[in-house]
Length: 493
Image (cartoon, rainbow, N blue to C red):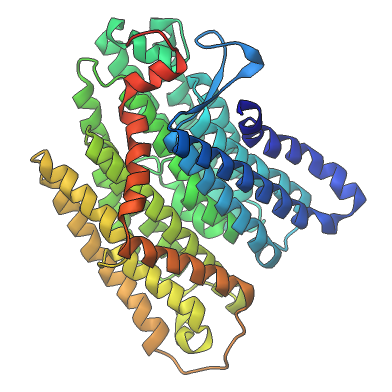
């Protein structure tokens, strides 16, 4: 069983190194190769998902046969099984989108970086070792730096440079934090760290975790280390923008939550959650207000995405099972909605030559299916009932209210009001402004967009099965004793 699951890491890694060989055979084979590999990844991830959710037992992979805490392990529990599947499905859809969206050469370099981005995000979610988390984070980040600059424009180069500078700062923070914790414990295994948490000096834990949170804030797109994100989202190839929003940021948020909750019982832990709440709050406020001022729709949705990430971080920092599950639910909903919206916007940009707001005037008459998907995505993000995001926002509000904390409630409502302003402005522009032009054939991409739109509505109408899934995924993060028991059987926390 574990050998099959190990392919989730091995397959994209080996495939990335196989791309130059494929180039020698024929460059036209590279894009179909990406489709085949991501389809295989999706099938393996689906199998792992079914295994974990049907048996209730995690899949644990031991590198080289060495068991933790000595050896390195991968841990595919409920959370990892769910989001590795999300990563694989989104990557498969983007591999298909590449045929339409990516024409800049060298395509072989793009394919290698695409696969390494898939590998890095999958590894960040699956690893059970804090230093290996750093390694996978660097694979993700370096791939993302290069892909941000891939279009070879001045805008793309500037965005990539911002990302590199902030990413370097974040990596330094993270590594120093890991060094502090390793120096105090002598272990890098996450389950072992949870066992030893109460024996560490609380000050060391607080400083180490604060540094790790700041380090992961780059990939998690949290203020003040998220200045790279709007530029990178706008400049990167359209499929890569989808991948950034759908799962790269989720990997950063998960890593932050996983490490934070390992040390939940340490003295002073609440001060760290207050730090994260402050960062999340500032992220929401700055992102949503910035989205109001944008004339480029892709950049506007980028700021909207960052605002939703702030709400997820807020939920994860509430310190309760209910809060974490609500955050995971919002993660899932955000991944679906933003995959659809960035794909639709990218399609408009390719077809009409740009993503400025003027290009969307009268779009409802020229590209009605694409416009419908954008309309559904906008209404869902605002939090209108019968759409998926309504339920995750409501769960965040309830989780905060049950703790007697009304500030998060006000923040969610503030975000929804501001989102309503700029999303309904976009909807009005598409359906009620501009002259009706010639109908543009929308092709297979419109079918994918409509399937995602249907999923948004299905979750909105029947949220309970999906809530049950994310509750198990949230428990995977919060119930540290079960995590330790699974990784280090026979040892009590």
